[in-house]
Length: 292
Image (cartoon, rainbow, N blue to C red; front, side):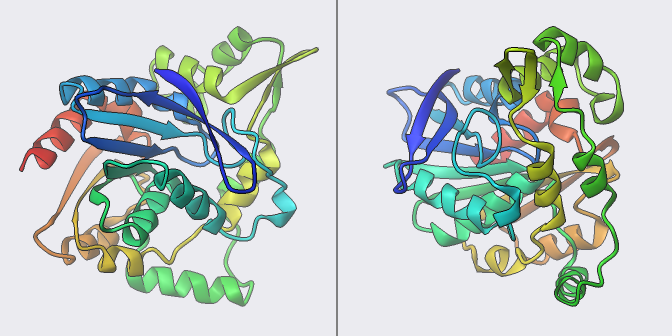
C-alpha cells in the first residue's frame, strides 16, 4: 500500500494508506479502532482490494492523534468523537467517486456518522465490531455521562498506563506478540500495528498515539450513533464477535430493525478483534453483500 498525505483546511497533515486502480469507480474508506492505526489493517485491506479485482479503491486514514498523522492532538481538548467525524468529512470530500465507509470499533462509529452526513456519495456502510449500545442503553449512558455518574471504564485506566517506549520496533513486536489484546493476533498483524503506530526516537521507538490521547478517547466514548444509522438510507452490514463484543445482542437486534437493507452477522467464537481473527471470512461476506 502506498502512503500518502491529506492536508485539511487548517493546514494539518494526516497520513493515509492507499491502494488505487484506474479501473475503479468506487472508494472504500476505512477507519481504525481507538489506539490503532491504518497500517494495522493492511492484511484485511489488501485482501479486500484483491477480492474486488481492483475495481474498488481502498484508502485507510490515520485518524487524529493516531498513526503517522501529525494533526493537533492535545488530550485536554478532546471532549467527544466529533473531531474524528469532522476530519472524516474533510477527507471524504477529497474523493470524486462513490464511497463505501467502513470501520472497526470506534472507526465504525466514525463511518456511520460520516455516511449519514454524506448520503448521496455513500453506497454502503460496513461495520466491524462497532462500539454500539442498544438505543435505550445508549440514552442511559449519555444521561449518566452528563451527570458525571457513569461508572469507570477499565479501558480508560488501562490505556493511560500503556507502555509508550521500547528499545526498537522488534522489541515492541516481541513484547506484544501473544499477550493481552494481541493474544489472538497473527505475527504479521502485530508487526503492521507496530510499524504504523510507532516513531523512531534517539532512545528507540515510541507510540505515536499517546496513552493520554487513547485513554481520553475511550473516556469520551460516543453513544449517539442511532440517529445517524436510522437516517442513513443506503445499505449496511455489521459483523460482530460473540466474545466481549462492543455491539451486544440488543444492539444487533436494533440494527436488524433498521430494515431489509441491513445484514447482521455474528461469530460466536470470535472476539472484538474479529478483523484480525477472521479476515478471510470477513472479506468473503462483505464481497457477497456488496454484490447483491
